[in-house]
Image (spheres, rainbow, N blue to C red):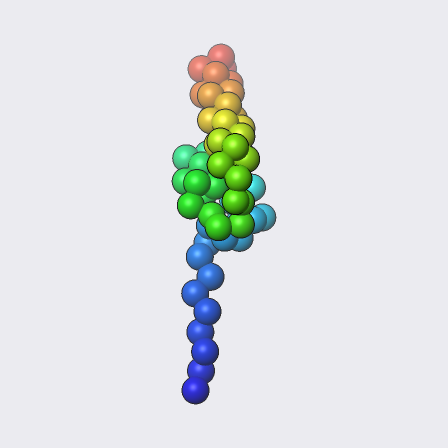
Length: 64
């Protein structure tokens, strides 16, 4: 018999960290859903970083 483990994409810590900076909406969702980060304060912190990075990206695009 074959045993399959379903690893969710949001449980990959490196992927979620990368998405927080590259594509914040998906990164924020991944930080919220992950089981790797237990503390809600840490999830809020990561989400805040993602939100700030998307705002800075929008400001950068507007200034050009």
